[in-house]
Length: 163
Image (tube, rainbow, N blue to C red; front, side, top):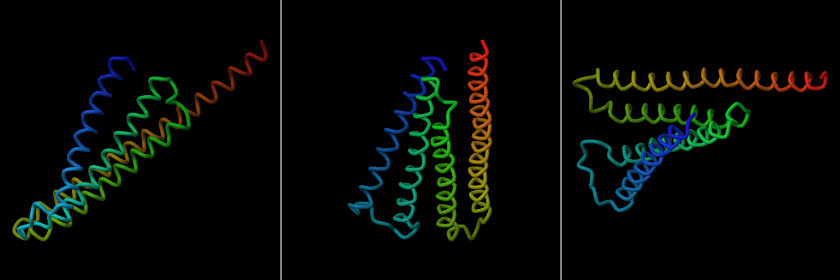
């Protein structure tokens, strides 16, 4: 990965992380201060808590991506240490899906006239779980690459002994 690509990705990660922290802090302030009273149409307190948790899942994934980019830049991504961050991304995606299913459940009572909205929202949650499965497949590919790298290193050492 080139230096320009790494810098661009890091700039995007910093902007997104800063924005999510700002929104998360604003939502927490609204919860704590009680400046935005609920009108009864939606369970806003529950939705705010779920939003704060959902943003936390995104932040977890962002930090894990940052660490993986650092490993790529250093040339150490094909190691067992990378699995920790890939597993963190998978966990964050699964947690985001669970948060989305919670939003769907909170929104469902208000959708008596149009239950299709709840079905679509449930479908989005399933799609998010599908992304977690895709990242899991990519983790398996990383595992194969690490195994091949370890094998190549072992074979190089044996060849050096023979020479």
